[in-house]
Length: 401
Image (tube, rainbow, N blue to C red; front, side, top):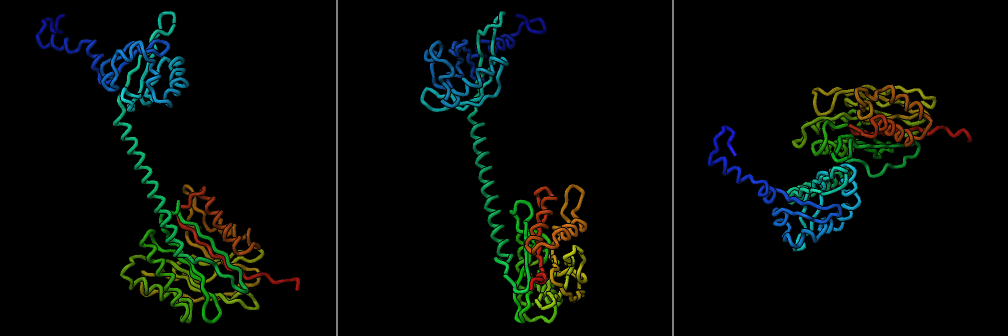
C-alpha cells in the first residue's frame, strides 16, 4: 500500500500495522460485544474480558449478555432495553452494572445498535461498553454533596426559625376591653432571620404597650438590632412619659451600640381600654402610619411620621393621640405589605385599604390573617420580604344589653 504521497515509508507502514482493525477492536478503550438475536454472546473483545475478569471460553457461545447484569438491570434489559432496540434500532447511554467474574459489580454505560439482514431480520446486536466507575463515583459524591447541602439548609432554616421565635412574643396576651390579632410571615423559605418585629406588653398603669418595626437588612446583623429594639422599647416604656420618648430611647441605643451598624423604622403606641373605646397615644419613627378602619369600611391613617431611628440627628418625632370607637380597628403593618411585588407591580396602599375595608367587621385576628394571606397570594406564595401585622380592635357595643 502506498503512502498518500505515492511512496511507502517505514513510518507509514508501522502506522498501518499499529492500526490493524482487529487490534483496534481487541484493545479499544471500551468493551465490544456481539450478540445473536437471543442475546447470546458470540464475540467479546479483550478490553471487556480484562475489565470483567472472564475468559472468552466462559462467555462466547455460553452466556447471554443479560445474565451478566445485576438483577435490577436484567429486568430493565428485558422490559426496556431490548424492546427499545427492536423498535428504534439503537439505544444510547444506558446505565447498568455488570457482575464480574469475582462477583464485583462494574458500573457501565451501554450503547447498542441492531444489525439486520437485507430482509429486515435481526442478525446481530452490537454493544459498546464504557467503564463508568469514575463517573459513578462522581455522581455519588455529587449526590452526597447535595444531601449535605440540603441538610445544612434545613439546619439553617430551623436555626433561623428558632432565632426568629425568640425575637417575637411567644404568645399574645388576652387584653380586657380590646381584641388583638397578630400575623407574621418570613421572607422566602424562612432560612434567613428577618428584620420585622413586634411586641405587646403590659405597662405599670394598666395600659398596654405595642411596638412594631422593621430593621434594615437580614441575618445576624438584623437580629442584633431587633433584639435591641424589643428590649429597649420595653425598658423605656415603663418610665417614659410619652410614646416618642420610647422611640428616642431606641434611637439612642442603636446609635450608641458597638454591635449594630444599621437603622430601623418603628411604631410605638400605648392602648388603654375605656368606656368610650380604646385610647391611643402613639409615635412613628420613619414607619408607615397605622390605619383606622371603621365598621362601615372607611380607612384612614392615624398620626404623623417622624425620622428613621438610628440615623439622623436631631431626631424629629411626634406624639399623637386618638381614640378607637367601639367596632373600630387599628392596623399596624411593615413594608413587606405595601412593597410586596409581582413582576413590576406593587401590592400598594390601594389593595391594603381595600382588604381592610372588606374585613372591617371581622375580628382582629381575622383581619391580620386575611391581610397576610392576600399579600402572600399576590406574590404567588413566595414572600420576598418579611411581613408583620398587628391589629388592635375596640370591641363593638353589645346592643343586646
